Length: 428
Image (cartoon, rainbow, N blue to C red; front, top):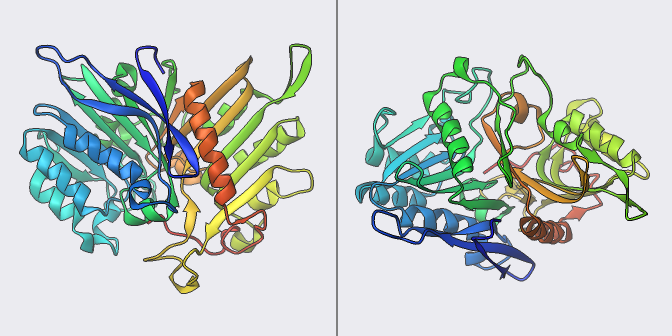
């Protein structure tokens, strides 16, 4: 991160370390005293309640610290947590503007008995021209697409004070649901007071709020060191069609020379759902070109699940990438593996690249967000993907990756219906 920020490494549970960078403006007359810990945050489903709810707690820190006259903006897929909903309502009551865009499933799912949406609706209203509101995308489609089915799959929070003079952005892989805390391995990246990130996420939030797909266009991201951001959907009829993830991977040189030594770049992926054939084929080619490729995943598609070979077959071959599946019925009751006590899984969607990236050696770059490696995540869903080019952040995510890799079950014994997509864990 920037030199003005103070980095401190701390333990999260007993299995990994997360980097926390304490940030804040020096409050003077007219400035906010709001401060938030910036950097990676990881939950630990096998840990204490505090460790399980680490990401939830960071959301609450931002919400509860928001000052009078500030604005909170949330885009969230599944939101089934009345405590967090009430925190938003309380913020509104004390003079904070609160704006929330949700997926339409919030009022049609079996979890609406949690009453999250009614709490928000009653406190904020539903008029998107007002300073505070809660709204939903259209039934069965995302805010920026009319293609059905599609979803608003985003998971980010923006706080700003004085029109962005101070800001915080939280980009997460986690929904605000009980299973997201206690069952699903998730991550979040907190960025404090970076105006470029704030402006990009705010513009995207405003596009979601407007719910006008005719005006939506996928834009090639402009890097804003150390960040870049990608906002979806990237429609199939886009004038510049392509796969954003394979485009990222195309920047990797697998075998290269450095200091007179031949070296190999390493690609590590922690992914909930991985069914995009183009990405699997690219990883297979990269492995052939000399890259080290290591993947922890929850679900791929396969001949068993779709009737034709898929990503599972593409990546399972002698000498291929190292693969570990994480889809574990940890309570021993297969009859409840879906809901209300789902499997323990990796729900993150992160990519780590180490080596020669964009014709520069020694790189350590990370991407995270809501974007699964699926077709709908690319062309139909509202999604966000954040790039962080920072060695300290990378180190925290690498430690997390290794912890998830160790915890993953069934691991390399992944010829199972759950890993091959025959049975699926819902994103609860």
